Length: 251
Length: 357
Ligand SMILES: Nc1ncnc2c1ncn2[C@@H]1O[C@H](COP(=O)(O)OP(=O)(O)OP(=O)(O)O)[C@@H](O)[C@H]1O
Ligand SMILES: [Mg+2]
Image 1 (cartoon, each protein chain N blue to C red):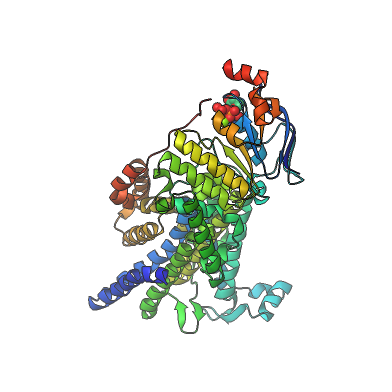
Image 2 (cartoon, helix red, strand yellow):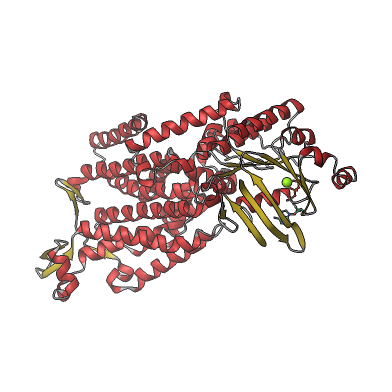
């Protein structure tokens, strides 16, 4: 069953067709990769799907609901989480607090009960703390919990961002270049982690430039070039697709 | 429990100040300390708006004035001429009116301080909602401009309206019996009690806001400050949180206005002036935008000095200067200068990565 389907999606920036008539589906439980050269429109596609950008036209359907044009916080509430190519930490907050924000939607404490530090919010707060700590430990950065997130090393910030997205307990996770800037060992680690996330029952839509990682872990691949979808297939078939080879060699 | 313990030293300092003034026979200081405490209630509310929700209000004197002026007018302006009006009769039968005699022995019918206070704070909250809903959906500092306009309107309104006393303001505002034995009043016989009352109100406000900041809501607010885009993607309804914070800060300002007006026994148009709003923003900036303790401390200190007349006729100029100097040399507040060096070294921005194929 398709958890996400994108139909004839368009996004123009002035005269530039950053995403041009793109359609594809993501099946629940799979890892689907979106690849393409720099400027192909991959990040723009993610922004359209997650609500950060409005499409010029087209349909984005998530869990059977049309979500194009909805605000990101509404789409998040439907069970979609994402990370960013250019990491967006919550400055001024610790790694742990960053992850705790990821639990926002699971919480119920409002303005008044929070101001009064009402007893019925204590249990929720403890649960959020525990869960967030567990996620940091899952990503092996438990020791950084109380460090300001923006002062962490690059790879650790990536991990915090991932933990934060997982804290949302999403059904679909969008990862925009999770291995960018990481060395080969860290990249392999990220690959194992993404597979683990999929096995936890979270569908993954992945943008990644590291081809060996993509070929290793993806169930299906979409190829974008200058905003257009030029191929969609299994990894083995993509590797042998002449047009894809031409684009990547001709770069 | 830990949070209560955190304010114990402050509580001790409050008691110490009272004892010192009593021993040294300088109890008159308590009057300014009481007034400074009420102003600081407004300051800490504004601090949450500026520091945590990242919005600037240049109209908080307006909310203070709504609280103060409505309380003052409703509790002093006699309703005798409207005695037969349906609304007045209804209020009277609900026990919200108070009959008495004025200075010259004439019959007087006014709204009780409690009813006036609740009404005044509600009006401030509703106006904050009305300003905030359209404005806080926009990005950037539109709130600063909208509240500046609002502040100017309130100022001109009280100056032009006889019911608000025009340039003279309103005097003769009665004491406010909060509950049995506790009265907001400037009479020297209840000076010490009012000092403790004002500080009790301020510290309660502080505890409420500290609780808020350490909760789910506070994290969401700080996240908005850290990265609006990411907070949005985590499910934080940014416009709603900014609105709620704005209304909260307006309510704090209005409560401060109500209480200080009953304490002073009156209110004048300078309380509604835009210079007052700028002063409040300057004080929050000195204390450190996102620093409740710093804002409160600076609120008490600077208001106390100002009320003692230390700045003379340069009062407003001093606060303008403070604002400029802080923005230039210590945008994170005075206290950050002390902790500053450590922090700078620890903050390393990630390099922007544009992955290679
Ligand atoms: N907000 C924007 N305004 C104008 N043009 C934009 C905007 N965002 C992206 N673009 C343009 O749209 C095109 C697609 O950009 P996008 O970031 O989606 O590419 P990408 O596939 O993610 O590239 P990369 O691999 O470098 O991350 C680029 O030409 C880019 O310059
Ligand atoms: Mg990109």
